[in-house]
Image (cartoon, rainbow, N blue to C red; front, side):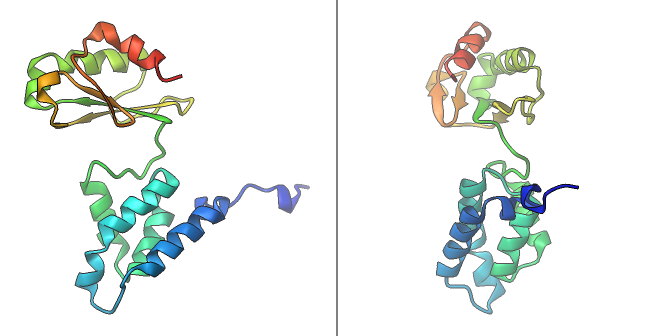
Length: 173
C-alpha cells in the first residue's frame, strides 16, 4: 500500500503551489471585468506571465487563465497554438533556436539546423530525452548582418557554421 503523502501530485498546479499562487496573484491584479473583449486584451500578457512561471502552458494552466479572464479555453488555446513564443509542452533547460529568415537561410542556416538535429538526435520542436535541450527554428531575429544566427536561451551566436554546433552545445554546461 502506497503512502498517500508520498504520492505524486495530480497536476502541475498542485506540484508547484507557490507558482500557482504567484499566477493567481498576478491575475487578481488585472482589471478583469464583464467585458470579454477587454479581458481578451489581457490574455497575451497573462500567458507570458504563466509561461514564465511554469516554463510552458499545459492545459490546466491554460484553463486557469481562461477561467480567471472569463474566456473560453478554446480562445486561450488558439493564442497559445498561434504564437511560436508559447508552448504547451515542457522545454529543455537550453532552448536552441536557429534563425531561418532569408539572410540566415541563404547563408546556410538549413545546414546548421540539420547539424543540431544530428548532434542532438532530435527533430525541430523536440526536446532531448534528458530534458536538457529543445531545438527550434525562428523566422527572423533581426540580426541579419550576423547570419546565420543561433539563439541559446536568448544569447545570440552569429556567423554559425555546422562545425560550430558542437562548441555551442558544449558551452551549455
